[in-house]
Image (cartoon, rainbow, N blue to C red; front, side):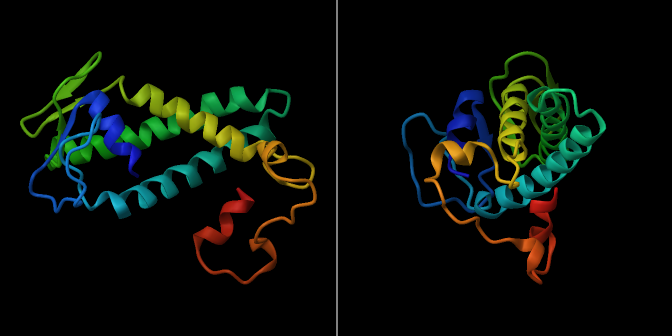
Length: 177
C-alpha cells in the first residue's frame, strides 16, 4: 500500500482532508496526505481484482492454449485491473469526492466532486496487473509459478496446499484459479 503515495505524487492525487491520516508526515516524492484507510482498502481492492484477473486468465489459457500466456495476460488481466480501477475511481472521485487529481496526463473525467484521469495511471496499472498475473499464473508441471524456480533454492517444499486442507473462505480458492 505504501507505494500508493509515490504513484499519487506522479499524478498528483490529493486526498480528502476528512480522512484520518497515517502519522507518516511529509516525505520526498509522495503526496502530502496519506490516509489510514489505505491499510485495509488495498487488500480488499487487490484481492477482488486479482481473483477476477486470475480466473479470467485461467479460462483464457484453457480456451486458447496456443496463445502465449503473456499475450493472454495483456488481453485479459490488464483490462480487468483497469476496469476495476476506473470503477473504483469513478465511485470514489465523481460520486463521493474522496480524492481528486490536480494534474492529469491525457483525457480526464471532471465532475463537481473531483477530476479522474483516464490514461495515467490506468495504463501503467493495467500493465502491472497483466505482468503480475502472468508471473503468478505461468506455472510449471508442479503448479508452481515459474519465477519461483529462478529465486527459490532447489528442493524447497511447496507452501500451504489449500486444496488438501479444510480452509474456509475465498483465500482457499486462490490456488485453484
